[in-house]
Amino acid sequence: MPAASDGVPLPHTWRPLGVRLAATFFGLMLLILCLFAWFGFDQATRDKFSFLQRGTLVGLGLMAFACGHALARSRVVARADSLLVVNGYRRRRFEWAEVVAVQMLPGAPWAVLDLADGTTVPAMAIQGSDGDRARRAARELRALVDQAH
Image (cartoon, rainbow, N blue to C red; front, side, top):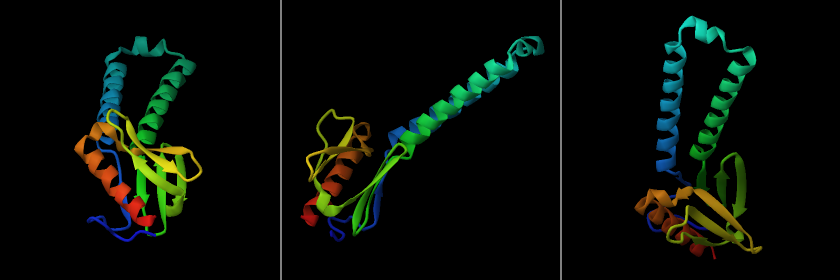
């Protein structure tokens, strides 16, 4: 059970920055564009859309929102007793003894947790596209994992 180390107070949460900003910005831009396009049509053109076609457009918008939300809600939470990893809509909790190592290879999209059973789990909260912020987060998490062993 790690205590706070290297200036990382527990509990501590890591979240992706770039993905959250992109999902919010592009989601809002897509919504605004679609609304301007819809209200830019005259009434005769809007009336040509059937209920099924309108439902399809709304469904596609909801699917885009669900994907952006899933990426933006990714996080890793380090607590004194466990590590919580949320990737998209999947949530996994690990005891510190289960996590053997944290890898953030150059060019990798996100950090990867090596588990004691030989499997790996992506930690999508630590996005390689966040640059130095991601490398610092990986170092902090690695220090906590090393301290637990």
